[in-house]
Length: 108
Image (cartoon, rainbow, N blue to C red; front, side):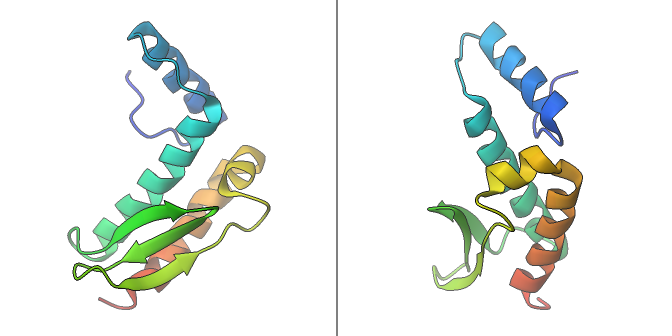
């Protein structure tokens, strides 16, 4: 099983090992941050029935821009960072990302 988007810390460690086997050295932090971004983007795409908005990192926040490049939403972590949130409770972080994606999509 190849982990694309880790859903918890066990999968983060497995993803890190898989990447290492392919010659890539990636930190847990980088894997977690990419996972948070991917999870949030996947929720946005599902809610909007396509890729209309794009999420990117801006410091500790996720920023959503629409197809015209206008910023439409900002999502901040519940704690000090999304990485800390994920490490503390990945399931709760995923649920929060889903709710924030719903809010960011704004009924589109």
